[in-house]
Every structure is written in C-alpha cells, then in structure tokens.
Length: 223
Length: 208
Picture 1: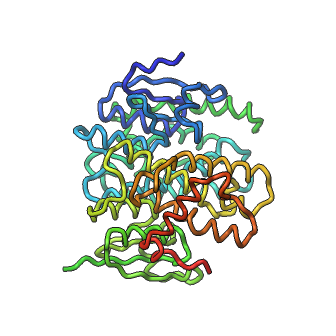
Picture 2: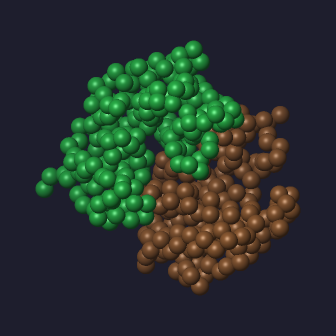
Picture 3: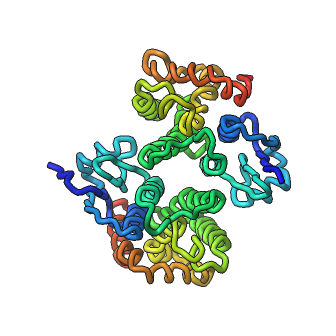
C-alpha cells in the first residue's frame, strides 16, 4: 500500500530525460523529496491514479496533489519555492525566450534522438543526423557567449536541455556520429553544467544509458 | 512612446485566434497582419526564423513565437484581467490541460495519428476510440464549471476555442459527430456558453 507521508514525492524512471529535469529543479531549490522508481512495464497504482491521462513519468506529487509533464513541473517548482534560485528570468520577454526554446527542445530533439537508438539505421539515418546537429547548432546560436542559457545563472532552458546530455553517448554510438566536432561550444556548456553538483547527481552515467539502450534494443528486436 | 503590438497571423488558424482572443480580453490594441502561408512575408521569416509559422507577436520590435508562449507573455506583460490563475498549482493544471489539448485535440499534422481532428477524418475505429477517451477527459475536467477553470474566460478556455468552433465545422463538413449532446452534455453546454461571449464572437472567424 502506497505511503503518502513525504511532502514531495517524485515518480520517476532513472533513464528518463524528463524525470532528470525535475530532479535537477528540485536539487537547485534544495527541496527534500522521496524518489520512487517506476517499472514502466508494470506501472504502480499510484502512477495510474496520479496521471490517469498519460500514465507517464515524471509525476511530481506535492502534498498529495500531482503535477504532470516535466516542464510544467519545473515551472511549478519555480513558482512554489520562489525564494531560492529562480529558474526563469524575471522579465516577460526573457521568460518567453526560455519557454520558446524549451518547447523547441521538446518538439525536436526527443523525436529525432529516438530514431538513433530505437530504430534500425537506414537511409533515414543520415537525414536524422543532419537534422539533429542542425537543431543543436540553433541552440548553440541561442547560447552565444553566455556561460548558461539563463545568462550568468543556470536556469530553465539549461535544465530543459542538459538532461539530453546523458543520452548523447548512446545517440552517437548507435547513430554512428560525433557531436563535439560539430557543436564544440554546446559540449563546453554541457561540461560546465555537469560541474554543478545539482546536475551531476541528477544525471545517470552515459555508459549506463548506453547499456540500458543495448538491452532494450534486444527486447524491441532492433539490430 | 506608445506600445506597438503587431500580430502576424491567419484568421482561420485556431492558434492565431487564441492570441487574438487574449489580446481582446486584455483590451490591447494591435495591428493584425494576415499572412499568406504559400508566400511568407520577409517579416515572418525574420521574426520566426526557427519555425516560420504563425502566430508571431511583435511587441515594440521584439518577436515572440509559439501560441502558448505568446499567451503567457501577454498575461505577464499586461497584468489586467489575468488569463492564468494566481495559484501555482492551478497554473500547473492550466498548463497541463492546454498541452493536452494541443497534443491530442489540435494536431492537424499528417503524422499525428492520435487526435480529435484526425478522428473526424478517418474511419479507423481505434483512432475514434482514443479521441472519445480524450474528449471524455475534457468533459470530466469541465465538471460543473461554467468555463474551464471557473467563471471567467481563462487560458484553457481560450485554447479550447478549437473545440468550440472548428470541431463543429469539421463535423459538419465531414459528417461525423464526435461531440454529441448525449455523451458529452457538459462540453456541449460549455461550447454554447463560450460562443455566447461577445469577445469570443468578435474574434472567431465565421463558419464559412
């Protein structure tokens, strides 16, 4: 029977880039929480109850009330615990830019990225690689010479994107391409983010992701 | 210097329309520029170089794209008549539902097989089943409120304008009845209420 005694609970799945976002946001704000790992082939009653619409993780549960969708949860965390480490800039235009690019990450990177790992590499593969790199280059352009997308301070858009970094090694291996030569500034930014404990503790080792992908590809029958 | 607000849009686009409703609700004066998508203006290509789509809001020369991002920008810049609720949890709920609507109900793109729009144009049982399920979620969420999220027109309502008008038109055109009064009495009631609001009537294009 599920305990609901912790004030903040995160229903999560360790390789999920989306789950990682919420982990980082909670860490940035210094919020204590209980993490519950879901088995996505055998979803808990709590998950199904808290996210009946999508039945997906991550789900942030605060005082018993669920918040679903990673970026919605990150904004909720920012607005609820607003006295520490603001994640979004204070001006509406800055906020709009951060949201626009986070939306871009969601719309583009995930769908292209999954082609490298979950699908057999065919002719489509080359087009996917180019599109992926083009998207990363656009993001690099947005970063410019700033240390973080948020400027001097690590913020919302940094959180939205950095979690994909843990999957880059898997993308590169299975997609057979290399990101750093094409997007050196972006990789520099990735490494800078990883120096933050809130990030490095929230992201799994890329080799573990790679192993996870290897195993799951067998299950899917991709080779 | 006065506020300069331009909206690059398309009268028949629900995304563009939702921005117009928001601007009107807030009483903001703006210049509407109708785009020809087969011949995109240099202004559009410059202001939204990433997606090259409408709507794009240009405020004092700075461009904002993506309708939901625009709606939040409008709400944060012109603070009268708030569109989003104040409470963080209620805001999270509103954001969740508009995302749901955009992903499930509104996607007219060819590669999105699961949407209410698609259900109106297909014979596929599974797609129709799923669409019913999605609409049912909206029905439950609406519950007994007059509009989504309470008494006044807010973010979710503005986004769901699609259901209000376009779905009706599509249903007529395609001869499919997805949103019938027996199955979804509350949603149909909401549609009537929403279309009844004068601001909405002004902003929506005619059914033609």
